[in-house]
Figure 1 (cartoon, rainbow, N blue to C red):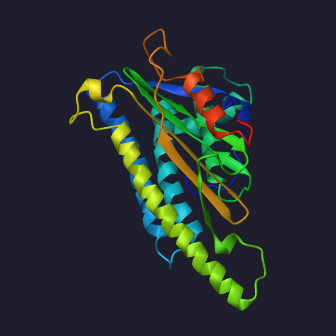
Figure 2: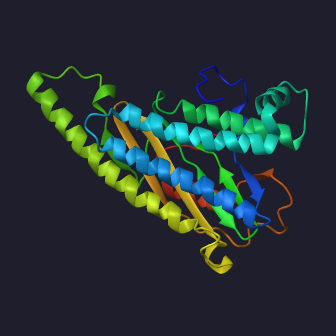
Length: 271
């Protein structure tokens, strides 16, 4: 799926108020989950490095992060639905199949397409929620109207600006934009550490230390202004009444509703 620009012919309703629950039955599964989380942290650090480089455009920094995120999501596609994940999603949406694998493939396909569009669409906030429980992990792929949250930091992208400024003002604006990007880079590095702390290596920590963890992130833009947020989330220990027996779609938990109230006061959760 990487590099494709065609619209995924899916249905955004599959994302609404739902999450993917994946079991963690053994040490091997925990290591795979940890590797995926470290890939996200590394992508955030790489984006920070590029944002701090005045010779790199903000869009290039976003593309570098997106490529790593897309690779991680695509790997999940293949775990869930095999090599034919796209075909499974298409068949599910055409009504030719009605099974958990097709629903999961549709969830990931729709989510990935929308993630890929996030640098080109204004007023769309991407806000994933990842939670670790003793025997499983859940991932909510969420989108909201608006471009920011109450807690987001903001930074400016000159290449996205449509204002025609006089030369002296344009230079000042460019310098201030670079400064805002360097501040954002420092924030990204700081919050990538949160990912590492919330999802530690299973071979280096006890089960008690790692059985709960969580993060919520948010990013969007309005014109030339971009936003970013990442913070810890405490999973609800009473969310699930039964063990995780397989990867499946589940309804969102209380953590999703809580973070929605805390973050999206100026926007509406739409997917």
